[in-house]
Image 1 (spheres, helix red, strand yellow):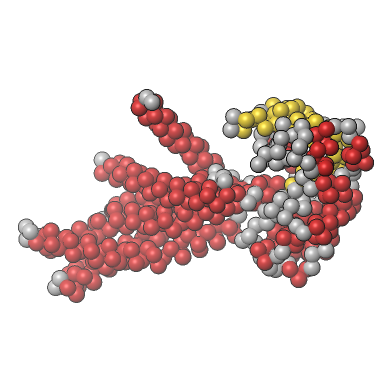
Image 2 (cartoon, one colour):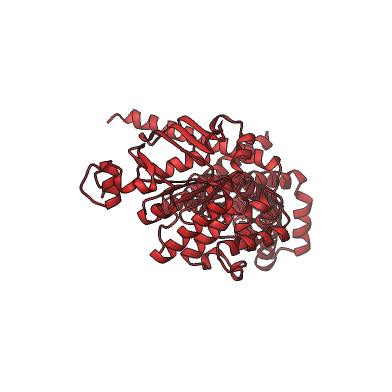
Length: 256
Length: 253
């Protein structure tokens, strides 16, 4: 067997998958911007994707903020820079950890959920049924999910930013002997609007990736329970990889 | 007069296999055509091509003489509003209640108010003899036969010109199956529509068909009135009707 052939086949397979996903994402965006918008579906998805994700996002953020504060304290102590804990915590949370970790958690919670739901609808012919009932599945099923995830993830990340900073604050004040008022003053003096905005832009893009990837995998699933299982796995893995790659790209663009 | 629905030379290749190899069928108003054939012979693909869920590689799907496959999407959608379909597993939306399922098209495509849609859904439930007490439950709580009834109510609520049935009796006990067959005959008569069904249940085929066509290896190999089924003179039809493993058709196990 020719090793180059299998590398080539893999590359072509990956590129065509990227092409198919891009075309699907384009169709989803077109569906978002063309009437009718199913408002009831959209609000239900905001509830499902946004509100019900609050606990998992909050718990993640508080622990990450706390661990970050501890690590920065230890690292900073090596060159007498312990006082920078609040600055680096807020920077790390708003620019990077808030959006990325929220994205990764939601890749598990939301992308998998969408892939499983739409995948099951596909294999039980519910999507075909919807088409025969003169309703476009892209408008009814996919557009509300994509729109809800794109709009609610920035809000979730804003909450995560606040809770994450709080996590750092709690550790700093309670076990690292920081003065509470000074910690908060340092945080607010240091953080800039563009740090938060960068995080929110990332969050919007990640939200889109999460919903579009889940819907894409589910929509194209086949072969019963096995196929739905595969779609769910691919949705989680696919959205995590895309989130991390796009995260780097957006960061690099902003830094320049 | 043009047939209500006509498939001309439909070919479809799937995963390197020629599933449909020039299928020709037609059905007129107030007529019921049943396509029989073994598993994997292309019955479902034929139905999907007719419904516009799958695009044939070549051939025409004519509705009232106009080719659906070559229409721009918005006009095709308008033509497809004439269709109603009962899916094999019911394909009811499990996130919605039974009445919302039945009225799905009225609410989401035809923009009928929810109150009116509910009223019409309950009327459709009565027609298929499904008690309105089940209007607010989820489809998962219904028995198989009731799910078929709900699926049928959903298919007929917008008074379609052409009704499609995919294995309407599969998975039902013989008595329930017969009740569904009766209901199909009654609905087709009442709506005055054309009906196309696929099945491998011969009892069901005899009951609901005016005409029967047999699909084998992606082609229609025999077609005739239901009464002539037992004297078709076609060895494949004879084997299928009698349900014998030996004959010109190889059993796929």
